[in-house]
Length: 68
View (cartoon, rainbow, N blue to C red):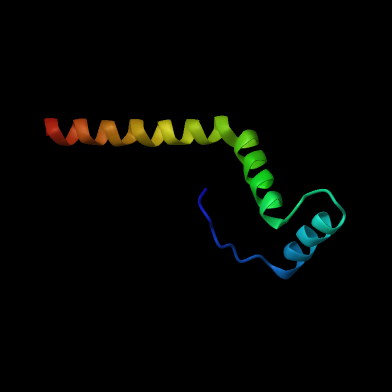
């Protein structure tokens, strides 16, 4: 598993700590994992469309440069 260091605003850090102390999560790392998983789940289609559009734009520019 990869470890990532994240700086959080104090208010967000306190809120995360309250979820752990309240028993909702086992530790802060679990809060971050779940938050990231939920972000990905909610934005997966949007992110995929954005990446595909960028790939298409790159391919069209490359094709145009090769022709011109």
